[in-house]
Amino acid sequence: MGIEPTYSISFDAGTLTDEQRDGTACVACGTDLAVTGLPSVPVGVVKGAMVFACTRHTQDATAGKSSDWPGGEPRGVRTLEEIADDAQWALFEGIKRVERDHGPKASNVALRLIRAVVVDETVPEVEGIALLREVSRGEIDRAAARLDEIAG
Ligand SMILES: [Zn+2]
Image (cartoon, rainbow, N blue to C red; front, side, top):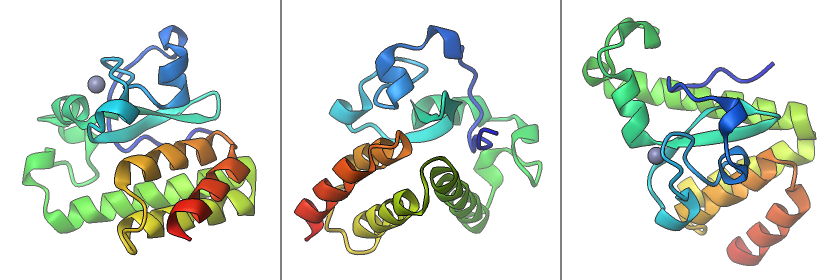
């Protein structure tokens, strides 16, 4: 019952470090994503928590692999609209997953966080992603308190 990863990357769930399982480190190179602020994307779910990889690996993984994309084209020839559709779909699936795992309060906090980062720009992206990871692990009250503190 894991969400379908949007980006294709192979990793061995059994060999992940605690940081990689918590979603704070890249599953491919181990980089601490919270510290480096490198762009990252969800690439799967391990034991109920989303795991992430730097986009530089996922772009490599999808280049030229037409079967990864619904339209059959490699990513480079997809239109911006198609990429935006995929991103919205991934977001929708992520929110559904959070609600299924942790209830409506969790999905409400996740939506508020996304809004604060993307629409209101009251929460910096790096912190917003870190808080979303907490919500996906079920640390909802802590993330909500921090969100209230930053965004008011
Ligand atoms: Zn990486």
